[in-house]
Length: 119
Image 1 (cartoon, rainbow, N blue to C red):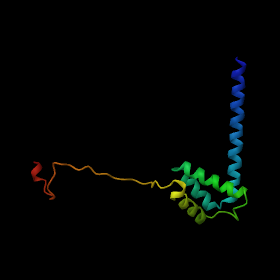
Image 2: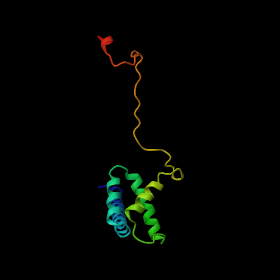
Image 3: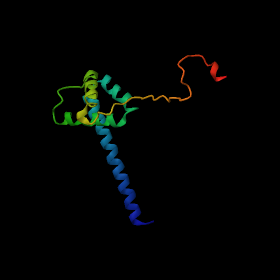
Image 4: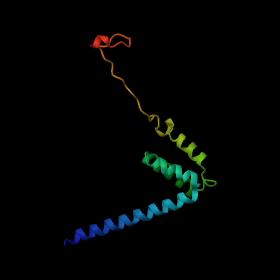
């Protein structure tokens, strides 16, 4: 067994352990600063927008650790934060949604509903 390979495996295990500890601390902090309804909303939103939820969680944790968060965050406050996060100041000018573009067929010039001309 190569000793450098063993060291890298140990480093990977230590890094994974640090990551796990960090995620546990994150979960504890979020549990303390979010009301249950707000936590549930973030969990549901994380299913489709992981990056956005991660950014909101980071800002909540930063506000809590610096003392800028007066109390627990309600669901209404969380909704307001999520809406602010979509503003142009945060680069959220890109509106999410579905755009349907219908193809225009050049052969069908008539506007009537009669398809007898196709037979």
